[in-house]
Length: 244
Image 1 (tube, rainbow, N blue to C red):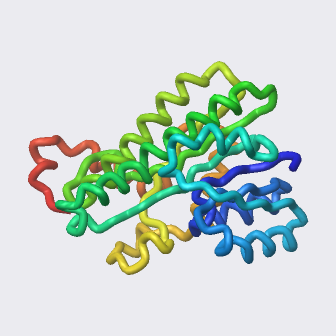
Image 2 (spheres, helix red, strand yellow):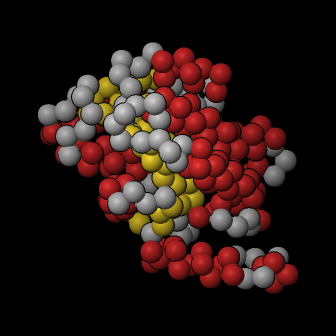
């Protein structure tokens, strides 16, 4: 498939925006999804628009024991692997439900981290320039009661990507962490969010790809960089009393 990109969580709005922009730059696309049928229309649209090859593969990131087998059976190894997997659940509904807590943690941290590490092991051995990109969240920068487990999981993903960056520093593999704020997607639909801090999937895709070309390590939307810089400076004895 020539130069190709694999996108885990390929049916998300951000993934589809990324796929369009990468395809317009000549990259072949490998979507990794749980619903092959739902992605077929998008697959055909991208192929017709940009004249690239687009393939979709079924995989559930919660099936962590099968990650190595899945990667080994791909028809070709991509040079860029992106994880755009995410699961957000209202904290009030998971308070006493250990199964949902486990799903939040495994979908946002354990599964993507293991998948990206398995991909990194393979890509780091190539002589060409390669990259793994993990889409994390500003929610992982500081724990908050309102998104307790989601924030904890994203903090774990951010930390694992930092460790991965050290591990593969001497190889041709670039490891990039994307810390997103609010994006107008299906996952945030119906939430009461501040309009000034909401980004579109297309703007988010532009930010990610521009940052990749610049080989940045950690990426923030500039508005969220300011917000999180302020939040992280608040002393813990004050922060614990806040309710935002």
